[in-house]
Amino acid sequence: MTNALRLPTHSAITHCTFTMHLDGVTPKGRRSVEQALVECLPSPSQLTDFATSPLFSEWFTQWRRTPGRRGTVECNQLLTGSPEEVECLRERLDELSRSYGFTVALTRVD
Image (cartoon, rainbow, N blue to C red; front, side, top):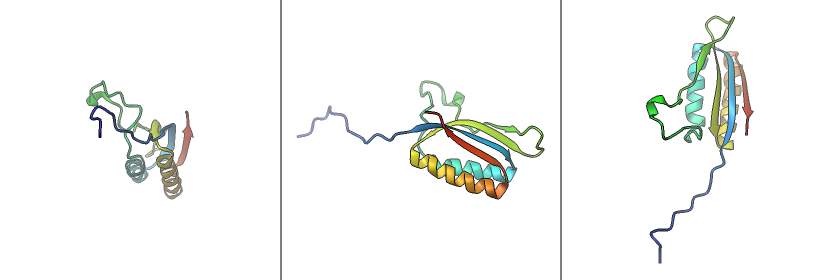
């Protein structure tokens, strides 16, 4: 017999929090980085405050012009993902950094 009041059990996915720092990214490299973020980090961010309006949530990648490197941008972003997602992103960003000539660092913070 099933108890309708019993909550379903789910296996917990362990997420980690990490910083992503990119420096000297060209416009083509930026598009490829954004695509890698979409493909490698499909799970929802653990940093989102669902009590706030989605219009004010910080869901976008924060790009800035790289000082002293005309035509390139940099990013320093706090992200979350499962260990597998983070490893996927690390591999993709390493490939992209070699192809487009930018620097990348992923650092776990938890």
